[in-house]
Structures are given as structure tokens and as C-alpha cells.
Amino acid sequence: MRVVLLESLSAWWPEALLSVGALAVLLVGAWTRRERWALAVAWLTLLAAALALWRSPVPPPTGVFFGLILCDPFSLAFRWLALGTLAIVLLLASASRELAPAVRSECYSLLLLLGVGLMLMAEANHLLMAYLAMELVSLSSYVLVGLLRERRSAEAALKYLLFGALASGIMLFGMSLLFGLTGALAFPDLQAAVAGTSGPMARALLVAVALLLAGLAFKISMVPFHMWTPDAYEGAPAAVTALLSVGPKAAGLALFLRLLETLGPLWPSLAPLLLALTVATMTLGNLVALVQTNVKRLLAYSTIGQVGYLLIGLAVRTRVGHEALLVYLVAYLFMNLGAFACVVAVMNGTGSESLEAFRGLARRAPGLALACAVFLLSLAGIPPLLGFLGKFLLFGSALEAGAVALAVAAAVNSVIALYYYTNLIRLMYFAPPAQVGPLSLAPALRLALGSCAVATLALGLWPGPLMDLISRLAVVNLL
Image (cartoon, rainbow, N blue to C red; front, side, top):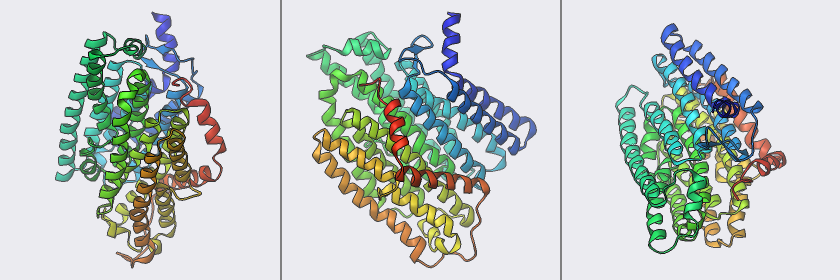
């Protein structure tokens, strides 16, 4: 047993370092009362975790910690996505003026703990581990959403908590039914138990799986489990909203994909429902975004629409679709976090999160307006930006799988989304400024904006290295 634990720890050092570092950040913040010290410890922890992940072995797809988690190439891709998301969000949180100094160390600590949960969701090879990982992400998210000392933030956190508790209960009920029907909790055992089922047993399994996937649908903001998203995004600090828009979505899709492959024999019955919900998710998100006047709510509904595009990679259930999903997740990380970095910058300078605060931004901060335009055009799928490549691959995977209606629906939704993205660009460049004087940016914000903008443009122009890396890491052990 000791040998197994040591071998497991060698592949799990990044998560262990993040866990210890989160506690260290909390203690440093409590003892010193200096936010800079807590931030320094958070950065040291993140860098140590990245170094450990770089040096950690990627074993064959065999479980560690007695099969509870799976440290394979597929999970490695999502672990890097989680660390990249944490790094950019940490820059945004340190530069945001929304957060009071008294809660910053707690914020940094919770961000690191949430990162552990994101990694565990991608690595989970057991239903109980999947549930524990999701609860770690959820509980950290509830507290982060309510960090602001205002009524709106507390209300958003309470709504998020209530919806999350309901989703967790539904998911646990589905897990209990699945265990009662199959006697298995580990994913390999579930796959063997589900194979060959038919008749009443298959129909009962479908009910259990539908309840289980409903909990995941809540986490990734899939329709009809999206109701919490706009309120939570609006009430949370902008840096936290940025995290919620990317991290849990990527980790939830990774776990969704593992479960769909585990429950492969039930796919013919699940496919029509998933296809319908994919179209409903992208359509509702984009249509409701058209009438938003708050930039956080606009990006919340934009996130729902983007999740609809990402679900295409799951709905087609092909290797090309899964690789396209990974490419678009990388694109989504940079362009969406970059867009929220622009929101943080505008809120720091104006104190407002309405669309009107972006009026005339090109005159006050030309570099910020240009970066914001790059992110919005990439989200809309305009070439030669990285978002275009991701959408091109996703829509192409739908056509290759024969889902022509799905590809057409996605293309129509992209046209609808182009309107509200370009409307924000119009306000920045063609409307008179809402305020006078230049808008200054903190160094951390400049670094976050520059990194995201360069990645969005460079990877869109030269996607070869990214495509080669994803083809080696992604989905090789799932199909």
C-alpha cells in the first residue's frame, strides 16, 4: 500500500502543492494582515504546481490512488488549462479594485482550492471522486461569489447556493440509482456493467444517467440548468466571474466526456436529447444576450452560447469532435478571460459595469480598446483569430458526423452573436466618451491583457504547434 501511495503522489504533486499552498496563503494573510505577502505565496504555489506538472510522469491510463483518479494524457491537457486559468484570474483579482483588502487573502486561497477541484474533475475515475471534486469547486465558488460587501453579491451567492444544492441532490440521486442498478461506482466497472443491457434495465439506467448528467449540466450552464448564471455573474467580483466562465466549464466538459465514454452503450438513446439541448443552449444564450445592458450579464449569456458550441464536440462523439473541443477550450480560455480583463479595467476606471461605460473607450485607452476588440471578434469567430479556428473545427466535426442541422444552427447562432459583440466595439470606437481623461491600467492587468491578446492572435495565425500538441494529448485513451 505504501508503494502505491508513493507512486500515486508522484503523479499528483501539482494538486498536493495547490492544496498546501491554499492553506499557507490563508495563514499568511491571517498572521501578517498584508495582502502582498498572501499574493506572493499564491504565486509561488502556482509556479511550484506548474513546475511539478511539467516534471510529473504521465503514466499509461491506469488509475492512481487505487483507481480513484486517472492521470492520463487527456487529464493532463485539462490540468494545464486549470493552471492557466488560475494564473490569469490571479492577475485579475490582484488588480481589481472591487475586492476589499480584508478578503483578498481568502480570495487567493479559495482560488487555489478551486483549482484543485478543477483538476480532480478532469481526473475523476470514480463517481464518488467526481462528486467530491464537483463539491469542492461548488463550495469554493459559492463563497467567492459572495465576497463583495453589498446586497447584490449576497443575493447572487444565495441563489447560486440554492440552485447548486438542488443540482447536487439530483446528481446524487442519479448516482445512487446507478449504483443500485449496476453495483459499481468506478468508471471501468460501470462501463462493463452497462454493456449488453436491454429492456427495462436499460430504461432504468437511462433515468439514472439523466439525473446524473443534470448535475453536470448545471455546472457547465447548459439549458435548462442555466438559470443561476446571469445573477451569479453579475453579483460576483469581475475576476471571480471570469473564473466561473472558464474553469468549471472546461472541467465539467472533461468529466462529461469521460461519463459519456463510460456509458457508451447508452449513447443511441442519449444522442437525440444531447443534440436538442446543444441547439437550445447556444440559441437561448445568444438571443437573450442581444437585450442585455450590463456587460457581466451580456458575457454570462455569451458564455451559455459558447457552451452550446463546445457541446458540439460531445454531441458528435468522434475523435475530430473531441480534438475540436480541446482547441476551442484553449481559444475560449484566452479570449474570454481577456474580455473579462477588459471589464475589470473599465470597472476600475469608471466604477460601472454597464455597456455605456465602454463608450469612447478607444479615445481614453486605445490599447485597451484594441485588445477588447480582438477578444470580442475572436468570440464571434472572425478570422484569423483563434476563436475562428475553434469554431471552424467544431462546425466541421458536425458536418463530418452528418449532423448538418447542428452545423447550420451553430452558424446561424454565430451570426446572431456577431451583432452584440460588434455593438460593444461600436460603442468603444464610434460613440462619444462617457467620461473624459485617460484610463490607466495596473501592471497586472497589462500583463493579463497582453498575454491573452498575443495568444489569441498568434495561435490563430500559427495553429500548427497547438494542433500537434492536442492531437497527442487529447482523447487518445477515450476512443
